[in-house]
Image (cartoon, rainbow, N blue to C red; front, side, top):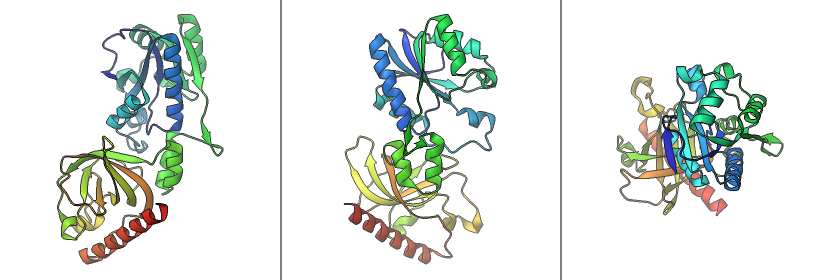
Length: 314
């Protein structure tokens, strides 16, 4: 898969395109990408996706933007796994936000990307003031010679699958529901970094993973599985995702969240490894303890609860 930043170089071949944020890459997204590949094969064109960085709501309303479900790296990995051949990561800037819908279609879709067919979600909007919608795109396609189709809404048990629905499920601790929407357990990937080594002192060594999801889609203590990015290892564990209130002196909260995963019955050096942490079940909220002995006791309880979870589901 080839990745391009913006539209500085015209596409080498005609494309079948889809456009959107694709945060979380849920079942609705994957149904759209499956249709993209089907249509690109029929037209002998490149299967391409356009996505935006940052998320438009992060640009317009940074203080109230939704929590990201996936980093750009995770999104690109999901595109590659789905079989997309080219991804255009579009910097969402003041200039881009001001681009009229007509210019977006003529300059970006036609001239830069050589679109033969465009597939979008049924709620997709584009152009300055979000004035471009599906009807506008359909009419532009007829005038300029490219096909347009809307991907119908994908539902599960009568509920529309969307990134917002996934966020709501995660925030409510409904991890099984989120997994149903995603088609897999929600996961965060990252590199193991050195920490304070306090977990080792407490008898529960952790792999500390610095993450870029801020704000977090959820916080707390979870039953997890931990795997290498190549999928060669698969280990049970328990993880804390949040701001570690007990370990921040004088109530000062850390500026960035941290993911700490304790792997059950594992010993070894994971520093520098890139791991994938899949969240299966929420045990409790993140809370502050009066002293480290209380924290140690609670961690032991969390580990027992995680073992019981795996025993019950094996």
